[in-house]
Image (cartoon, rainbow, N blue to C red):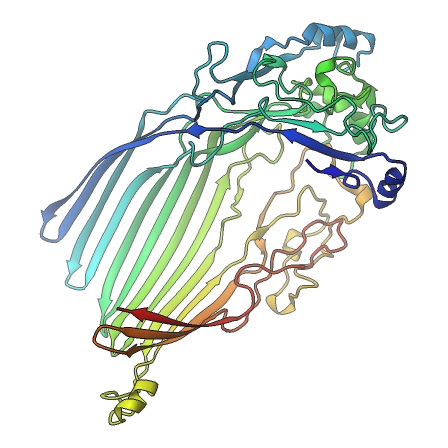
Length: 565
């Protein structure tokens, strides 16, 4: 693993420590291999029923089963035991008794819980229980109102997969990182050097042998033992009409409801009653929670080399429900989302060498898949980062009317026709709204509606109004507070997509068996730049500016020849 001599310190301090032969951070890892597997099975019935010459109904039912993850040699964490006292409980309580803090009386000092492993202690080898009731009904109909008009509608339920092709087993305990801990007393003395960065040696993975004592002092995650399978409910209603000149128009409403979506669940936040509710920086609360107190885990060997291995720790770490870990989390499935859209598609079918298709979508995508604060009893309802209100695509092919037996040059000789006749032009345009932006745990004293600026005034040096009332000072930012500022805003967006691809191609008949095709293709033909999202950190000197691009890149022109036979 890399030895990092600058990550954890300013440049000056990093150079000074380097001169003294003292590292400031780094780690080395010993990792296990894995052989994980899962199985997927499905049964379905679906058929069309001709109810009337003008009405066709489609009915279907699908059942799916995805087996839980399985690691061939049981090299994976399975769950977290929230009930059993941890083996270090007595020793930790005895150490805590020497220096308790008022917020946690000695009688209330608990170190409950720890990790459990697949195939150990009576646990199943599979890391969770399978969901066997995934039935997905489908229904739809098509009704012909007249010779040129059709109504269509449908509903379907679609399950997602959460198994082996979507996630990996958790090999904590079987993978072991040894961190460089330069000092155990905040820099008063140093125990590590560049010559000997790991004075305690390289830790080898204990596997499941430590039981509930695995990964003490570290952040741990585990699998929900009974996860629900996420699913989507989708419904639509459309009117399709044929017009003269072989033009077909399709107007469709599409709705979607996501259910049982994954939500990151934190089990060890600082209790809500200790956090500030002030809209301004609450320095007394910050100082109170960050104050250094005696660490009851300092003398315990299980915590050596971890974030809880120092003599003193922040008061906040002892207020956590699972104070013997630096974090306890899993993914649970109770999130949801909703999507509504109006989709218009128009197509002119090929006539006289010309065809074009236009698709336009106007939509809104909301979701509730995270909390604004870890202690919130509810999920945040917010615009999705995948919400793009407007999307337009146009694609077409035009066979130029030049050459023998065509409108222009119908009498040209065969040689000239081979060079100038039979060319086709193809184009594809894509336009799309930008991504919704957020500003983190920011302070805004002004009007939210004053942040966006007119497109004509927007440039890479000022993408939005940075003077709308943001607190820019580092010394006045919020911390250790109950956040109320939304994570994303629908009306404040990054750059969208404005791209045209074009190509010119022609087929050359070489022999009866062989045909060559020449292609001239241009990606981003108009050389429109697509900017990355602007900097949205109020304390940054780059706040409100764009420093990168994304997407289609600069114009690219390629020449190619294909041979068909």
